[in-house]
Image (cartoon, rainbow, N blue to C red; front, side, top):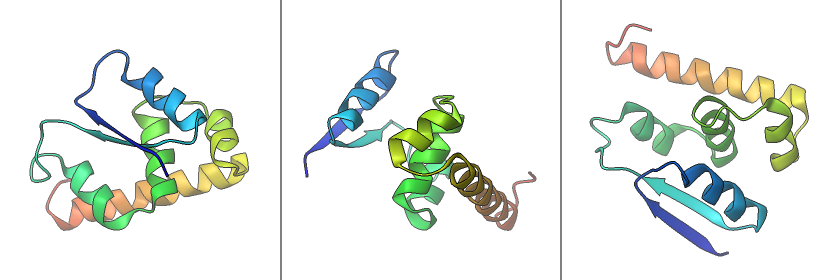
Length: 102
């Protein structure tokens, strides 16, 4: 499997990621925040599956429509909604455990 590592983010990052995924390239995006500072990064790396991370980040970071996420992952719209809901609940529990009021 081909992999692409993107260091940092910019205005063109979304287009690069979308193009790479369309070509079947596994993408990894990193920024200058440590896991101790980036709670979502630390959480995502330990508890969510790859598909759940793609759905969650796609929906809330890149504002992708559910229909597009369903098409890209091969899931139904209902399955995408449910996985995003469950991922959001896991994130809420994780942050609450660590004293972050959500």
